Each structure stands twice: as structure tokens, then as C-alpha cells.
Length: 114
Image 1 (cartoon, rainbow, N blue to C red):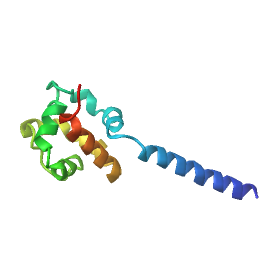
Image 2 (image 1 turned 30 degrees about the vertical axis):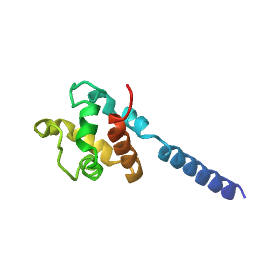
Image 3 (image 1 turned 90 degrees about the vertical axis):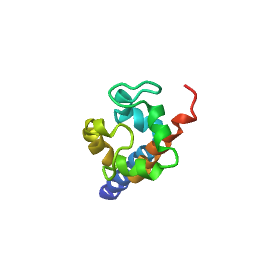
Image 4 (image 1 turned 60 degrees about the vertical axis):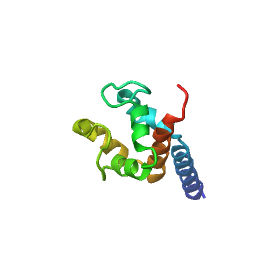
């Protein structure tokens, strides 16, 4: 009986952790994965501004998704794209749903009021 209760507890814990991980917003992913360290809202710093990225990828969300998964080319400042390579490794470990949320957040930056 103890083994069954332990097994059920373990399964419940895994489901709760997965539900919480999948419940993150694109903004939360952007902030917790370190994107915000190099990409500021309206100012180029280490990387291009969030506004510049969102403007460039508006209507090209699949291209941004491919780029973030390490399967496409950068269209914003490609000469400096290699700086992003360590970050792309981190992002590529995300589940597809979370990468999509990240893309939605980035592209929505042109609509957001800062």
C-alpha cells in the first residue's frame, strides 16, 4: 500500500511540475532564460532591441521560431548573430510550446506600451 501511495504521490508531483513549467508566459520565459539581459525594449545593447526584433519578424513568426530553435538564420544584425549561439542552446532545450510563447511575446513587442 505504501508503494502505491508513494507512486501516486510521485506521479502527482511530476504532473504539477510539468503544468507549472508549461504555464509560463512568453514574458516570463524571456526574463528567466536571460533574454532580457541583452535585449532591452527600445535600446540596442549587447543585442538588438526587442522592438527592432519584433518589427523585423512581424509576419515572419515561423522564421523567428526556426532561428530560436537553432534551425534558421538571423535577420536582425546577422553579423553579430554568433553572440547569440550560447543562448540558442539554452532556448532549444525548451519544449515547442514554450518557444512559441517566446516568439509570441517578442513579436507582440511592437504593440506593447513601454
